[in-house]
Length: 182
Image 1 (cartoon, helix red, strand yellow):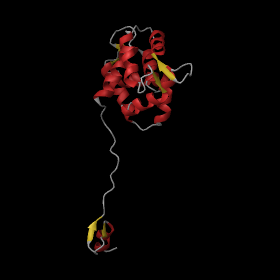
Image 2: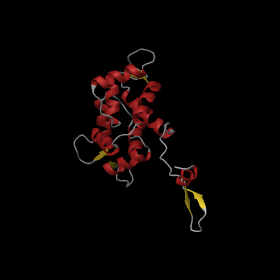
Image 3: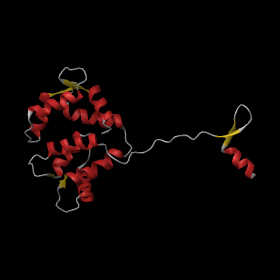
Image 4: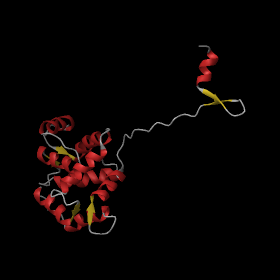
């Protein structure tokens, strides 16, 4: 191959026979940071699952939080995750450690639809096809967490696109995609 042929392979002729560079194909840039909105949602989830209000979550609380966010993990995986991010060796995960761990999980490639479905089903445990205030209260109670109804109503309001005071699977998926949580 001559130098001229090599150059030619990166160029093409326009309609007038002039040599012009071939257009570059844009590659999808892989995200490396979470948005403030994502961080806020993770903080809400962290606080919800920090059932004893200690500012740290243990293995069981972490497993529940990850499940609610659509990440199904086995006990061994959760232990390994704690070991990876637990900088102070407490066996507990503080929010900053939780953020590091979830960032890794959220930015890796995965089957988005499946992950969103798992998260939705965590809240819609009786398969009615929606999440309402009562279901959020039940999840909070099951976790031993007392959450003000006002906060739970705000969560519903933020995702409820048709103003029926509940979140359908479609609404849930739209919100999760918009926030790129999953």
